[in-house]
Image 1: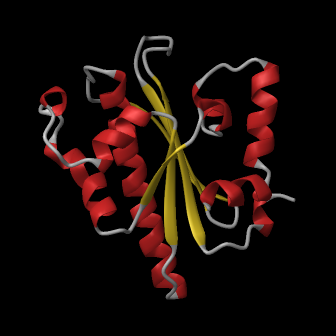
Image 2: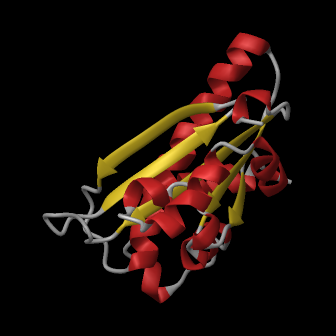
Length: 168
């Protein structure tokens, strides 16, 4: 089956980035949002110079959380239904920064505006989950994957069963 048959009242997000792998050594990011099918995606160059891969991934998470919050509000206005939201990332360090509001010397320079993620987690309007890179559908859009790695990603994108299991 494909995502159009996905019946959960859940918004799923997947986010990934290619740090310095582009033709101009710029960081690119991609986020994908599902709700009964692919609903939205965004690809963009990161404008912020990150000092670590965790910070770069945290920047990408912030943009994706903003997209999910907007999508959740739009669906609520149209259907009057509250949706649960889960965002998947393959970077455990970025998830730890978002999930743990304790001050860390290594993250003191991160812009406070980026802490929108923390507010969303504290208000329980978002779940943030780790997903292994091998199961990250957004990888297909940020990296030049060989066919043996691209095919499983394509199957994930078009498989409602797999996405439903990831969202649980």
